[in-house]
Image (tube, each protein chain N blue to C red):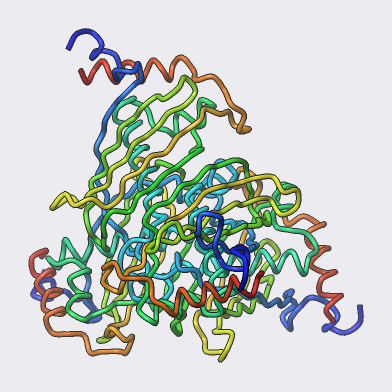
Length: 154
Length: 154
Length: 154
Length: 154
C-alpha cells in the first residue's frame, strides 16, 4: 500500500477520512406521512460533520469558527432511499474528500442501525469563508489537523 | 392625551396594543400524529410578533436589533386547545402588554381561520437586553414608538 | 389545442408550468452565522410547491393526499448562492417538469425580493406513491388537472 | 423511609420518577443571537421524555403509540435562565408527576453539563388520548409499568 496511505489522499491526490455517527429520529422530525421530514436529513448530516471534526481533528467546529474559519454548505445533494420512523436509530457514515484546494466535500450514507437498510445518501460541498462570508484560503493549521487525522488512521 | 383610551395603557396603567396575523401550517410543521408539532406554536408566535412590530411600530424587529436592542423570550406558556393540520389557515391574535417597566408580554390566541375554533392560547414575556445578553433599560425611542402606535389606534 | 406550446409540454415532450411565491425569513430559520440555516431552503421549496399546486391545479396538496396520492421527495439538489437574513422577503420561482411518466420535478430559484440577488437554486424530484409508500401509476385525474393548468396559462 | 417510598407517589399521593438525559446543541438549533432558538427547548424536552419512557418503563414511546395510546402535550411552560451555544452539552433532568388520574406532568431542568449553569426550566402536561385525539382512561398496563418503574428505583 506504500506511503500514499499515510497521507490523507485518495488515488487522485484528494484527502479522504471516514467517521461513523449514530442518532435517533426525534418526534419533532417526523411529519404526517409517519416518517421523517426529508429536510431533516440535512440537519443529521450537520450533526455527523460536527462529530467528524471533533473526533478526527481533535477540536470542535465551534472552535474552528472561533478561529475565524467558517465552512458553509454551498451545495447539497440528497437521495431518499427508504423510510425511517420516530425513535429509529440511524447510522451515518461520513467520508471527507477534498475535491479542490478550497473545497471540502462530505459524502454521507444514512442507514437503519439494526438492519442496515439504506435511508438517505447524499453529499455536501463546503467553502472556506471568513466571518463576513468572504472566501479565504484554507488555513494551514486546519489542513495540518486533517493531515494528522489521516496519519493517525493509517 | 385625555382619557385612558387614548394612551397605550390598560386599567392598571399597562400598555396594550393588538394585531392580527395569518399563517398557513407547513408540511414541515406536522408530525406523525397528523397535526402540528406542538413546539411550532412558538415559531408562529414569533412570526406574529415580527408582523406586530412592523405594522404597529413602523420598523422591523430586524431594525430594532440593528439599533442594539434585543427582546429575547424569558418565559413562555402554551395551552393546546385543538388540532390544526397541514395547509390549515391560522389566525393569530397578538396583544402586547407591559407588565413592568423592563418587560413586554405578548398574549397570543391562535384559531382556525375558517371556523374560529381555538388551537393554541399562550403568552411570552420578553426582556430588554444588549448584544451580549445584558439587561438594559428600555430605550426611549422604542417606548415612543409604542406610545405613538397606541395614539394612532385610538 | 394546436401547437405544442399550447400543451403543458416543453420541446422534449415534458410538461412545464411556472408559479411564483413569496415568503419572509423567520427568526427561527436563522442560525449563528446570521443568515438562514441551509436546510430551511427545503422547507421553503415545500411551501412553494404547496402554493403551486393550490393555484395552478385548483386543489390543495392536502386534498391530493386525501385522495390517496403522495408525492414524496426522492431526490433534492441545492446550490447556495447568496445570503438571506431574518425578515428578508424572498421570491421563489417554481417550475414543474415531468421528466418521466412516473416522476415530477420542481426546479426552484429563490431570490431576494427587493434586488433580485440569487439566494438558492435547486430542484426536487417526486415519485407517486400510496399511503404505504408503494409506487403507483400517476392517477388520470391528477394528470388531467396538470393539463388543464397548462391550457389555461397558454 | 416507610412503605410509601416503595410506591411511585409523592406525599400528596402523586407518582414521581426521575431520569437524566444528555444532548448536544445542534448548529440547526442556534439562531442569529448566537444561542439556541428558544422553541427548541420543547424539542429537547421531548427527547428527554422519549428516553425517560424507554429507560424507566422498559418500552419506547413508539411502542406506546402502537398500542393505541397517545400522550400529547396539552400545556407547556418554559423559563429561559441562561445561554447555551452550538455544541454545548446539556443535561436534562426529567421528573414525572401524576397530578390527576388522567394527566402526566414532566418537570424539566436543563443545565450546561460542564458547570451546571441553568439554561431552561419548565414543564409539560400530557393527556391520554386515542388515535383520533379523544380522551381515554389511562390504560392499566401503562400504569402498571409506571408502578414497576418506581418499585425498581426504591
